[in-house]
Length: 94
Image (cartoon, rainbow, N blue to C red; front, side):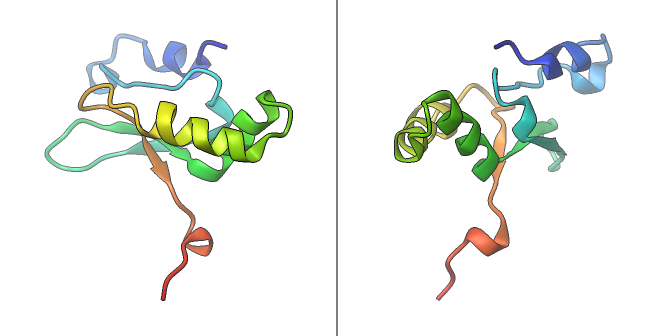
């Protein structure tokens, strides 16, 4: 499924030029992240992205997590490669 976000942000405005969005993960999109001196990047909810992939894989959460790590989070697509947000409650701190 093509990202509707790509359509929304491709309105000719220079500030959004080059943004990268993942197809099928629109519901996990959280917003944009700005970090000087680089361009803005899309940021997604990691947990929600894996849940979306798991639903597409008939509930196989482990398979979705493996697919996500290798094919989504592990794919570099240029300086505007999207980032994934990890909730503080999902991070194990010692």
